[in-house]
Length: 178
Image (cartoon, rainbow, N blue to C red):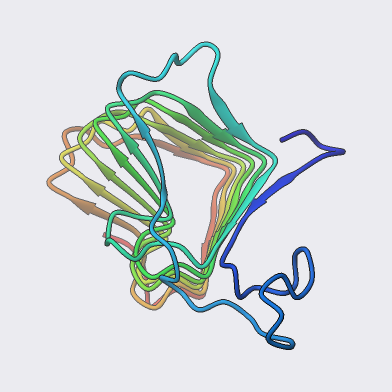
């Protein structure tokens, strides 16, 4: 998408976008209505990107609303919300995750397993963990607002190195950092 032409991926039942497309009266989606956006290692990382998108009501497979598997495709200036699993699951990924809002997922806002993403300038709220970093070498976590997550703001589990943390607001989580 573009700033003046964003793209929304949502449930057929979500009448907040496009109106009553299934002709059954005013309805909303439910978390896990559909699976995910998946970007694989074969994607061209210099030409592909996810920007100015909204992803709602995804995550039925447990692999996130957006699943970056072996891909370094960036996710920028996007809204990922109301998912049944992770907001963004970055597996073996060095993606730039910049300027996003990731909220209201049953699991983690961003789950990084292996890889080395950069997480910057995002709002991550009302998930289980805001960020969950496992066996990963995160490049940096900068200038994010990580709030109101039911467990940890940032949860490091067997992280390979401790990334640089600067300019973040981590507040109103059950535990700020582990």
